[in-house]
Length: 566
Image 1: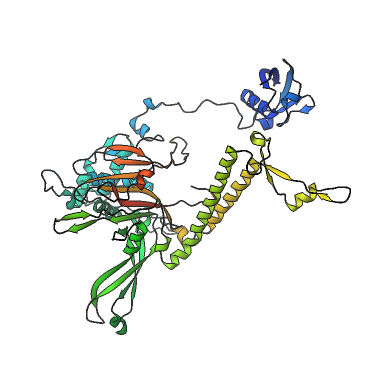
Image 2: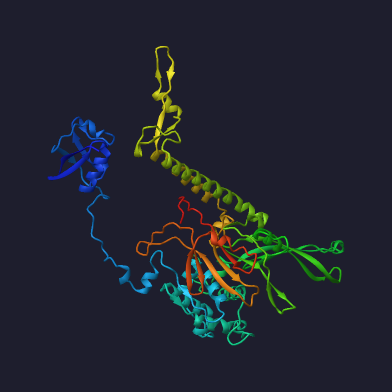
């Protein structure tokens, strides 16, 4: 590499600069940017022959050692003088425990096992993965005149999550456990094998806590325009974000009932979870969900005057933002007098398409959005693949051999207007068509603009009624966010843990959100470990090892009207 030392004169100051004669003018401009703060596009460098250009070959300028070169230009807003930070930098060792817990990448808090309370610890960790729940709990105030604050389950959950957010160590959930046992005495059952409390079913704990939140945790009602009525009933958090709705049809199986004039009855029923029933042929979550949407019921037929079998068929009329799925792995075994476990392996997806379980009306609203989501994703994947391919081999995709750095070009066909401008006629009147090229940056900008437009179109496809319901899934697609697992042969023994997907890091100072790394936190009581996504795939069951019992899915985010992902 041949170099020559020159002197750059700018605003009365002189800078000694070592110029690489094998480089281009753009490289020199960036050298001067680091010295003067003047951005390259605002620099005017006077050399022999005129003004220095980005693609000027420095070896052809005939620079001599000590030569003085004049530069003009002033810094723009982005090139202004670096300012001293307005806030004093605080190092990790100087932070409080609560400040450390708020830092990006901090290990979340674990929960101490108080004696067969792993079922509760796993449930609480999975439920804590719902950010809207944490936000609303933080604003919740105990207002009941009949409940003692210490025994108010919702108030104790608020205090517990607050304590967990302020430490990276372990927390003892004693106050919450006491409130749970007072509200639901079943969790205060003593062990039949000795001293202490008995092991409990995590799904029962989940259901009871959710039912309590449904009663107590209310969203602040939005005031109606022109109304001063303060008696408006506030909507519950659970009903908005965690409750779905079935459209059900109940029909008698006996043809005699239809002949007697009995008609199928239709109704609407809320649900807080979907049950995945595990039969001899169940191999995947979808199989169990489909089976759970149809059930047989024994009831009296007024038309026949006797008990007969009815078929109840359910379809989802509303998908909540957070969908809870329960693997029905436990059943009562009379010979041993306990809940035995179904060991069968049942796989489940990281992304769940729930459209097929919905009513025709809801499917009609969801399918255009779902299909557009897949189209946008494919386009983004194609663009990313092309970028990686170009980076690996610059000569691919029509790039011009000999190109270098940002000047690498991709060959494209020109538009009809450009052809007319560039065509050249030879002596026989023939037309030679010129070829045009686009830089990588121009190519990427076009593709990014196309994807942005596609995202805007995606937002426009959202059903107007679903758009009003911010607690509903507007695409029918869910992503897996948390898993509660059980290890052992029965619900009354064994061990429960939870896996929670890591959220994108957020800068506590700026609020800027980064990208998720795809890894998970494994909460094994007070032990918290980072694991990879393939660990989740191993939770399908098939033995006494850890198998999924509860899945918590979250509706995928959709772009705004401006095409921005929030």
